[in-house]
Amino acid sequence: MDCEYIGEFDYDTETLKSINEKTKKYENASSEEEIAEIQLDEAEQLREDGFLPQNEDYYGTMTSPMVEVENAPKVYVIEECIPACQILWGKNIYTFMTSDYNDKGMCWIEIKNENLSPANKKIYEQMEGQDVIKFEKHKGAVCFGVNKVGRAGQRRLKELAEKFVMQDVPRGEAYKQIDDFLIDNCNCYDEIPNPVYKYMEPLDKVNIEELNEYVKEYDKWLKSKESKKTIKTLNTRKLDKELSEYLKKYDFILEDKKVFLGGYHYKKHLNYIKSI
Image 1: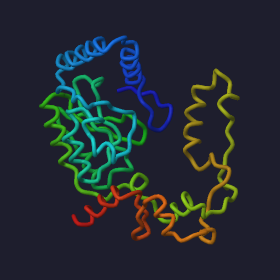
Image 2: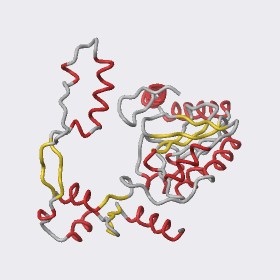
Image 3: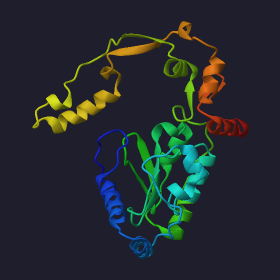
Image 4: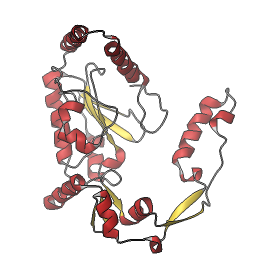
């Protein structure tokens, strides 16, 4: 599946085009009867493509917080992918994206590399089968799935998800180290010159003939330490009130030098602790 990389987790042009076309159809509808007709046409197309019927709550979004998706999967995830996703969520594997109705003949789940434990990365690497598909859709993430949809696709995707093992919640999405929390949320830092800073010309200053190649290098630079003129270093003396007050402000939970970004993530961490 070809993708156009504009940033680390951007969306392929084919999917964006389909979403835009669907949105325009509904925007141009002049009555409730016309909207109902569009919905009937879409349902008929799904049947022709072999998909399970679309849940009436399904809306789908580009990105949504993990807690929202897990609490209302039928709103965000197509029927083929829901059982497999629920298994992954129960094992503290945070999903990034799933296939939708544009992916005819296949259903898959995408996970950021950093959201997989070493053991689960190995399971992904060893996953194989004639009907199994594995690919990279977005930089920094991996996809696994099957080349079928409908009830058979749903069942087989669930079998693949069951191969993964329980893991702790991922850093970044679920928790921060205490030092990062103090810097990011409590302003406990000093700024010093970055010794590895490297200057790059802004994109609007680059020759149009060179822009294509330059954008790739510029994108890498933006994500690297070299793009920052200064770096932040921890200074706990700048903590101007009790740490507990900051934690209460954000409704975060501190345990063992980890700051969990809410009760949802902390509960999942406790489930992992109980499992070992």
